[in-house]
Image (cartoon, rainbow, N blue to C red; front, side):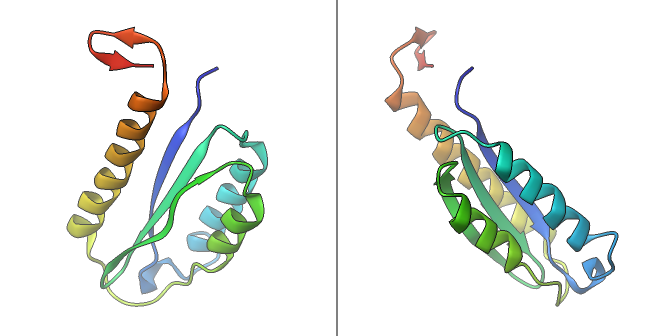
Length: 112
């Protein structure tokens, strides 16, 4: 199975503070982290009043670092969705470019 390049865009605005929102998302991300392989990577982009890369692309063998980033998510502020989507897409694009050049299988100019 090829490596997974996961980018999560997480709304951490004030409206996400109830137990069925951000805490539920954090629990899901923690479960996912435990299933990651060393060759997989995860990035976390957050948004509220501003956007931030909370966790740049991090390999699955760095579970403690990933879990600490997930634990550090807190709900507050307003919502700035447009800039957040743009930043998340840039993170995903960087991961795809990295994979493209680290692989050895060519398909229509792309390396897999």
